[in-house]
Length: 85
Image (cartoon, rainbow, N blue to C red; front, side, top):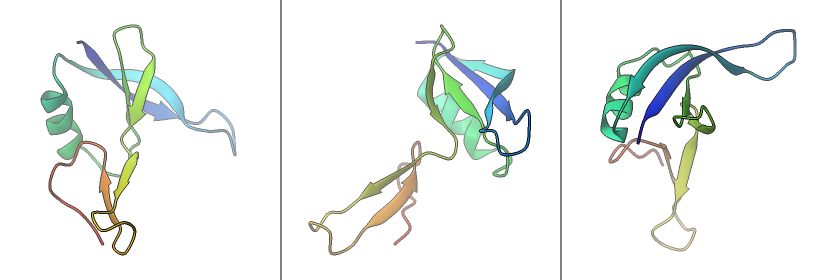
């Protein structure tokens, strides 16, 4: 699968961020993960498919609980092992 990465822009005050400039293109999610892990954390990137449909953004988080809600862990979508309590 082909993944396109776009940076983001906000056109007017209070508008949501939208994809703007294509900054990279990769064939695998591992390559996307490497790009995002080495990029500026303050910039919101959009990861899109080959038709430029947004799959997720770099601020997307996953919440997991191994013990039915007693402990909740948070991680970014492409992080495999770094979890925050």
